[in-house]
Length: 111
Image (cartoon, rainbow, N blue to C red; front, side, top):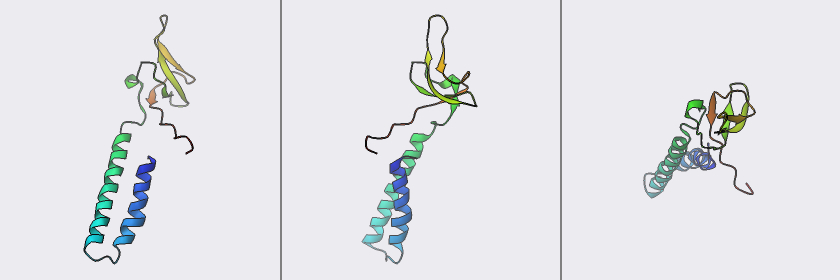
C-alpha cells in the first residue's frame, strides 16, 4: 500500500475517532466527517491503482522490452522479452516464466 494510503489510515484511526469522542453535532463534527470522507477516497484510489498489479499469467506480459518481475513458481527475477531474430525468448535468471508483475515504483531520493 502506498505511503499516502497508510497515512490516511493512520488519520482515520488516530484523528477521526479520537476527535469525534465527546464532540457535539456542529462544525467540528462536519470537519471530522469531511476529513474522514477524503481519507476514504485516498484509500479507495490507492487500492484501485494496485488492482491487477499482482502476479499475472505470462501470456499477458508486455513484449516490448519493458523490464518486469518474472517467476517460474520457484524463483523471482527481473527480465524482459527479447525479439531476437533466431529465437524470441524471455531474458531472465529464472526458468521458463509462468507469471509476471510490474516493477514497483522506486523510492523518491532521500526517502
